[in-house]
Length: 139
Image 1 (cartoon, rainbow, N blue to C red):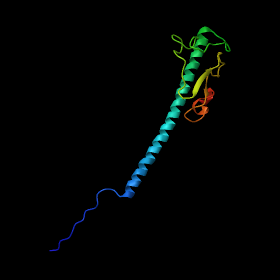
Image 2 (image 1 turned 180 degrees about the vertical axis):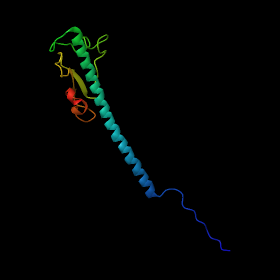
Image 3 (image 1 turned 45 degrees about the horizontal axis):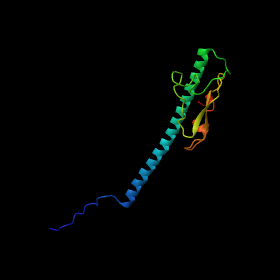
Image 4 (image 1 turned 45 degrees about the vertical axis):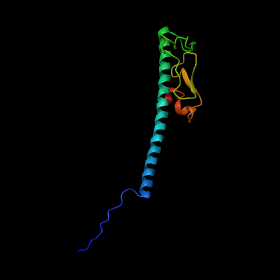
């Protein structure tokens, strides 16, 4: 009887297989980070639109409740009739994007015109137009 040696396949991964696995994982991670950045930009834009919408509704409510004409002056500070404890909006809104802030016209706007707009330069990249609509048609 002849004895033969039975060889078993080597356990583990070759260097080529390991390299392919690492490349696949890195590409999946890069896709995840790109998607997360796009999601964050979209959520910041949506939050900004909601703040502008809420301020616009507060100004229109104030105008309608007090029978104020278009073009009348409105105090857009915490001491004014729109912002402050017990008023339409409790606090002055802060912009969700770092580097941007809100400015107010100070007068009751005509229909189709915004009372609030965003100004500044985003510190996290992009342009003002990426995060802030300039008019309600951009929504």
